[in-house]
Image (cartoon, rainbow, N blue to C red; front, side):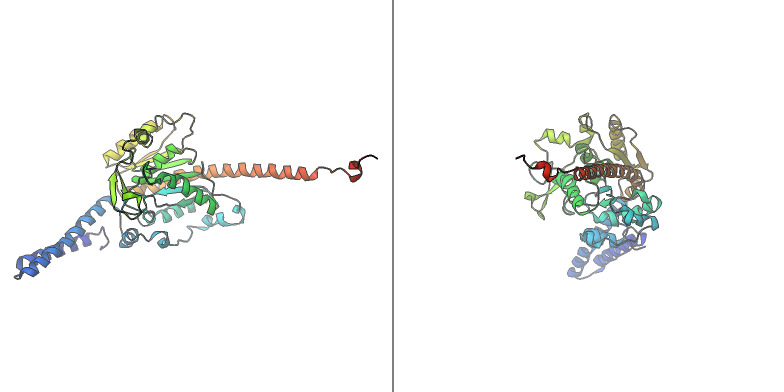
Length: 372
């Protein structure tokens, strides 16, 4: 009842605000009237923030809000037991040489990777999927795409500053491939995101089609908006709002998915796409439908899920997350299996070549002695 979206919490704020207004009216001493008036701003401000939170259906628990806003990061991610017996088999002996596919999950703004746990409930959602389809296991990677809650970098390479796309699409995949038993960046990698992260996923997938095999866009947009970047590109500096491509029309075009999709080199094999939007957000729906039509000139059968009774908000993204993962994971699993098979055949050929080399008869010493 008293959670951030609870009715009781809103009623409590109204009661406190009303009580303070009564104090302002009845207090005889000026100092107390001023104090009550100042205090009345607090519940009014919290009410406004809570109303926005409820409208977007973002934080549902105080714990989720605290974890996200304090930036506790991956250290606070809870440890979950596997969803069922089948989900553990990938860590047993028969899979010791298997390299898993990867899904890179990109958050919105303001937000950080913890939002995938606290707001999106990705861990129990994914474990439930694995319990039903254990062969579709993948590694989930959740990078911090903005470098803090104050910024909105949009995964863009700023020609005058931070190279955020390079970090998301190059540095992170290469680092994960070095430290985990996963497929190298390529068709067995997926990228997905919501809101700003959805734009990131669409933009990266079109610009780096060799690095990803599938893309999921949840309430994403398809043209960059002004970014919130740290002044002077210094971490922790005051955020400033700017169009990072001002004066660079060519880069603006390439980083506009709804425009660039018409000019992607014809020889590029694009990743498959999956789209979702809340049915009540007309702009999100129109943007997704238009982008889908453009995509289908290059990619066949682009799924588009419209979530009823929702707009640009957390409930829509949570509802779309399970279906998106169910669509993406088997495709990446097939790509990973193909890559493993190719690698196994190459290893077998190399082993056979080494064996044949060792099996060649060596000339005897007598045969190599020079004639006298």
